[in-house]
Length: 129
Image (cartoon, rainbow, N blue to C red):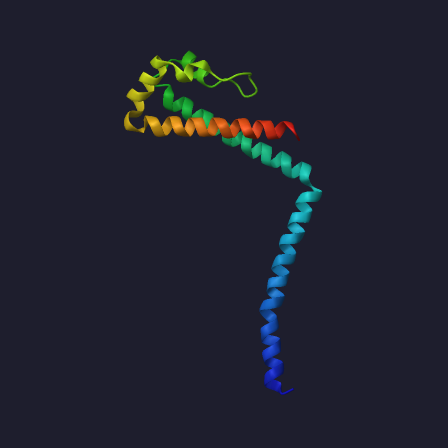
C-alpha cells in the first residue's frame, strides 16, 4: 500500500468513528433513561402539570372579562374532578365567548376540545403507571 492509500483510509475512517460515537452516546442516553425511568417519568409528569396549569390560567384570564368568576371556575373544574363541565355547551356561555373572540371563536373551541381530549388520554395513560 502506498502512503496515499493509507492516508485515504485514515481520513475515510474519521467520519465513521465520529458517527459511531454519536450513536453510542444516543444509545447510552436511552439505556440511562430506561434504567431511571421512574425519575424520568416523574420529571415528565411535573412538566406536563406545569403546562396544564399555564393553559388553564391563560384561558381563565382570557374569559374573566366576559364571564363571572363562578362561570369561569365551573368551566375549569379542578384536575382530578369527575366529569366534564356542562357549561361549555350552553348557549349563554357560547354567546359571551363569541362576543369576546369574534371570528376566532371556532378556532378557540377546536383548541379547547383538542386539549381536553389530549388531557383525557394522558390522564388515562397516567393511571397505568
